[in-house]
Amino acid sequence: MEKNTKNFSQIKGLLVDLDGTLYFKGKAISRTVETVSKLRDAGFKLLFLTNTDSKSPKTILKILRDYGFIINIDEIFTPVIALKKFLSKYPRKKSYFVTTEEVENEFQDVLKVKGSELPDFAIIGDFHDNWDVKRLNRAFNFVFNGAKLLGMQGNRYYLDRNGEPVIDTGSFVQMIANAANVTPKIFGKPSKEYFLQALNKINFGIENVLVVGDDPETDIQGAINTGIKGILVKTGKGQYFESSKSEVKPFLVIDSFNYLLDLLLG
Image (tube, rainbow, N blue to C red):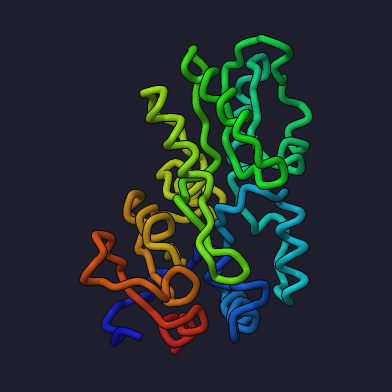
């Protein structure tokens, strides 16, 4: 861990990434369960800010509890939640979803396209349960003909349970955006709006919050986009981070999430 010369006396809340930060390869990272409990007991408000867009918030909560974390549903913020809030403003607009069935089922109240109708929104998320390029091509045609492209998050790739890289939602969104020559609206990290919504939910200003995550491109860049101090953990994607080779500069780099106890309580 880098030598701590920082003053964290103003910090009251943490926006914490999940996969790669609290758990990795199907299990909790060493001492993260204990660290979450100790930080909460010390009075810090926690919001778990994830880019997971293949599962409902309730499924994510179950996964965390199965790993041993004591977390409530209102402490989780996902692209699904952010997208729901956005679409609720447009009850008469129609959408086309390229997502998992589980996630699309979260949007029962949203109008869907029928037949050859042109939707107002083409929504791209994780769709690994129905990996059909025809779905992407249909979304592209909709966007090419005027539908607004909505990306559930901006990750280029993620690491699977074996630690292997897998292409992620952000890459598919950018492919369609480039082909249709449009600018997508991104709901997850690193979108500044997503982090601002998280700040509003945790009810603190940027000076009172830290972002903690393993991904320089989404966690740390999103923090930088929003003016929040971003701490990179060298687990998950963070294990490959080299400061000299990265354009993204974290406020601080620590070996693992549990080192926050030394920074904030030590």
